[in-house]
Amino acid sequence: MTANHDRTAWLKGGTALCKTPPPRQLQPRRLVLLGAPGIGKGTQAELLCERLGTCHLSTGDVFRAAKSISQCERTPALESALDFMKRGALVPDTTVLDMVRERVRCLTCAGGFLLDGFPRTVVQAEALAQILQQNSVFLEAVLSYDLPLEQIVARLGGRRTCPGCKAVFHITGRPPKKAGVCDHCGGALYQREDDRPEAIRVRMDAYEKSTAPLIEFYRKQGLLVSISADGKPEEIYQRSVAALNARTVVGQSRS
Ligand code: AMP
Image (cartoon, rainbow, N blue to C red; front, side, top):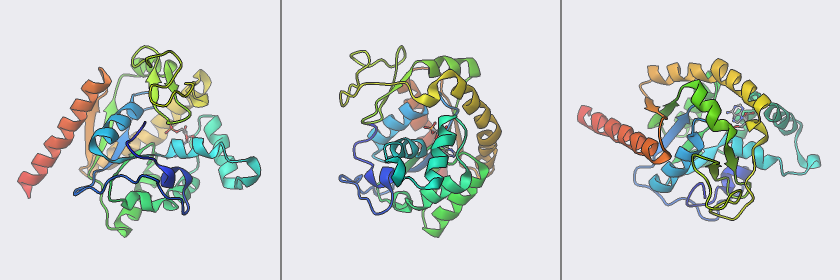
């Protein structure tokens, strides 16, 4: 599973409730993950959520879940969002922000959150800051994963996703126990449409243009924590937690 609880409220939006909400945390972790496609962000999100108890809020997962809604039930905005997604292009900010605002309960959830794939532009980051402030919750940190471009491209080609529980594997880096089958729920693993070569090129370009400025945005706010995404998932995870803990210690000694 991508987390130890379901994410119905996030995936469906509106008034949908989670069957097993994340446990209430004394100090809920509220984090954003940044990194180019294929850098291993999804895997880190999975590990961080399992072990820190937070909820994995991925905007990409919301759009992918929306694909199963019948065409006549889709709003024109959703229909057009899915079209952008299919081409690997970014969905317009207004559509993404409407979707996030409709799920604001997940941002104030006492279990905390780990945002993945959102914000992706400075406009989205500014809107997120405003939404959080209006709801009296604040970001703890923004984990930004770095890796040279050639290594990213090699990783993307082998990525496989479970349609059921959204777990992410890699044919060589993190293979499932049985080829093509999800370890967690037995789903048949597939290669995402937007992980195919043509879409990858568009996504990398979109990332460079729209998402890289976010790193500067969060650096200026003192929220950025840069982490090397080189190595095995467990090593990267340990590096991430060490960086977060170091931050907490520095923050405490300052106050
Ligand atoms: P991801 O799973 O985060 O790589 O997202 C898959 C696709 O969903 C992206 O290539 C975009 O088309 C769309 N998408 C997800 N999140 C956003 C966002 N915050 N802003 C714009 N488009 C997004």
